[in-house]
Image (cartoon, rainbow, N blue to C red; front, side, top):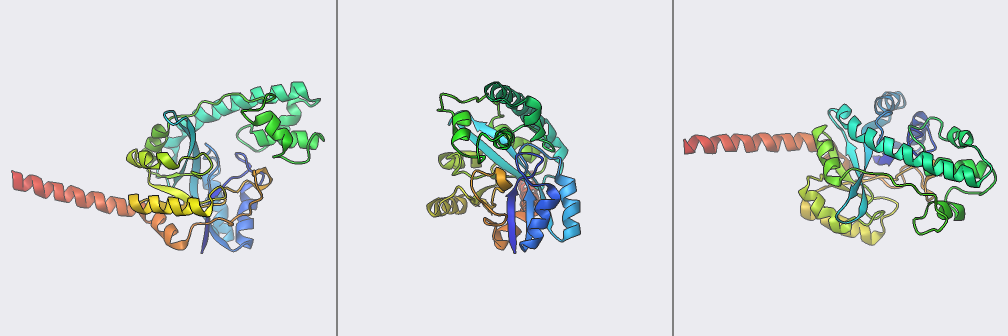
Length: 296
C-alpha cells in the first residue's frame, strides 16, 4: 500500500487542485496521501471529503515553516492528525501574513524590472492563500521571459547570493514554538526533508524538544542520507515517513505523486502513534499512583 505523505496543492505553492491531486492518486494506485500545504489548513476537511468519494484516504496535515536561530537554518515541520487543527491557525496566520508581505515586495520589484503588471502576477496566484515565487515565475514564463519555473532567471531573482535578487525577508517562528504548537493541537511533529536544509546535526536537539519523527524518504535525500536518517530514527525511536513533496510543475525537480512514499509498516506506526503514547502515559500514571500509595 503506497502512502505519499507530503503533497502540496494550489492552496499554497502547488500547481494542482485538491480534487485533481486525489484523482491522480487514485489512478496511480496510491491508497493514502497527506495534503500538507505550507502554513495552511484550508484544504483539510475538503480533502478528506473528496478522498472518500474516490476511495483515497486523505490524512489531515500541514507543513509549518520554522527557523532554528541557533543553527541559522530553515526548518520545516510536518504536522499530521491534529485533534484540534484550529489551534494551529495562529502560528500559520503569522507566517502567512509575513510571507504575503514579502511576496508583495518581490512582486513589485519584478514588476518594476519587467513590463508586466502586479495584477498579471497576482492572477497566477489565483486559488492560493498566498503569493509564492513560483507564481511570479509563472507570470514571467507566460510573458515570454523564460521557458521554465526553475532556471537561470529564477536563480537571478531568488538566489540569496545573486546580485540581482529581489528577495524580501520572511520572519518564521522558532522551531521549538512550532513543535510545541503542534503538540498543543494534538498533532504529530515530523521533520520534513532534512537534506533540503541540512538539518542532520540538529535532529537529536529537536528530539529533546519533542520531535516525533523524521521524513526519511524524500526527493532531496540520497541513499546515504536515507541510511543516516534511518540510523538516527532507530537510535531515538522516531517515526519514519516518506513523501514526494509533490508540487506539480511548481516543484524544483520533476517528481510524480507517490514516487517517494511511506512503507505500510511505517504508515501503521504513524496511524497508531497517538494511541500508543496515550497507553504509555496511562501506564506511567498508574505506576506513579502505586508508588505514591506505597510511599504513603
